Length: 118
Length: 112
Image 1 (cartoon, rainbow over the protein chains, first blue to last red):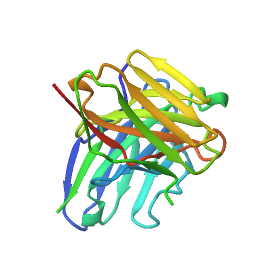
Image 2 (image 1 turned 45 degrees about the vertical axis):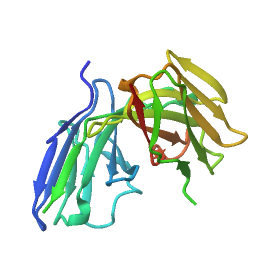
Image 3 (image 1 turned 180 degrees about the horizontal axis):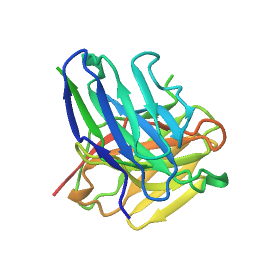
C-alpha cells in the first residue's frame, strides 16, 4: 500500500512566480491536510480538505494561498506571487474518515515539498 | 502561551539509555495524542497514538498521557543510534477542528 505521495520534492521559484504543490493521499483515504514547517519551527496546520470540499482553512494565509482537492486527481496547494518568506517545507497528510473515539483520526504524512524562493 | 509546549533540546544520550520526551498542553479539550518521529529532511512518521490517560506500549516505545496534569510523555527503552531524530508530539480535538497541533519537536541524538 503506497503511502502519501507528494511532488515535486524540491521546488525553486523566483519571487513573484507561482508554486504548485501536489499531494496524492494513501489508498482508501479521503481526507487531506496541508501543513507548513518553517526552519527551526514545528509544523503548522494550513488547511483540511475532502473531495471537492474545503472543510477548514483557518491556517491558510488570507492572500496568495489556495488549496483544492478535486473529484479526480491529487490535492493541490497553490501559492501565487511567492515571496522569500514562503520558503519552507510543505507537508501533506491523509487520513481515513475521522470517527468517534479516535478511530480514523491518525494522519499519515508524505515526504514533503521543500520550496525555496530566490 | 503556546497550545503545546515541547522542549526543543537538543538532547544527547548514550546508546542503551532510556529516553524521556515530554510535552505539556493548555487546552483540556485535546483528547487525542500522537507522537511522530522525523528524520532530517523527511516527512513525520507516526509512532504512537492514544486517546486515554495511562500508558500504551509498542516495542521499545511507551506513550504516557496524564490528562489531569495536561502532560504527555514518550519513553524509548534501549535507545539505538537509529533513534536519532526529531520527535514531535501532536494533539488533536476529537470534535471540532480536524487538525493536529504540534509541539516544536525535540531533537534527539543517541551516541554509540
